[in-house]
Every structure is written in C-alpha cells, then in structure tokens.
Length: 102
Image 1 (cartoon, rainbow, N blue to C red):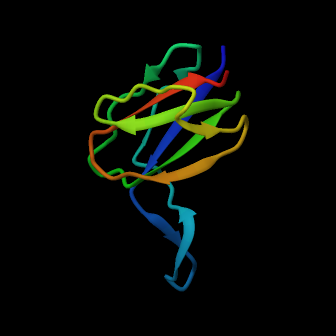
Image 2 (cartoon, rainbow, N blue to C red):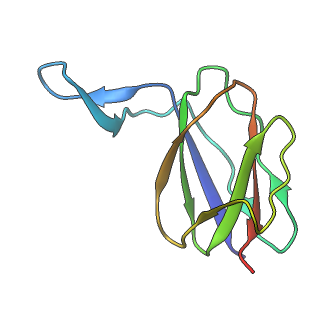
C-alpha cells in the first residue's frame, strides 16, 4: 500500500557557530503514523502545537491539502513520488489530507 510519511519540526538547524541553516533540526517534534494513499481523501492526525513546519514524503505521486478539516482532491497541491518536501504551517492543530494522483 502506498504511504505518506509526515515528520513535524519546530526549529531550523544551525551550524557549529550557531548560524541558522535551512535544514530541519533533529529530533523532530513528532513522527506521525504513515497515511495510506488511495483514491479517497485520508487525513493525518492533528499537528503538535509546537510544530512550525513538516517534511512530507510519499512513495507514489499524490495531492495534499492542509487545514482544520481538509479534504484532498486531485486539484490540490501535488507531491511527486519519492520526493521529500518541506512546508511551513499557518496554524497549530491543522491536519494534512492526501489522495492518490489521477
């Protein structure tokens, strides 16, 4: 079964001098249970209150939506198979919904 992996982060990383870098700082705030990607929209769990951005990786092409109660459609933001992408979040407690690409 195809899956979407969601990793939640609160902070960007930094180098040895303390300079902020455009990388995620481990450990993450949370690692969600992967969501099955099918032809029907499926939602993640709500994001942790400390989460500021997420890393998404799917093993098939799909589309996703973010919100308090999102429904993904094939018109939503696309995510390529096996590509890890990072996205900032506008509000705590939101979820991601995902659906397989047509």
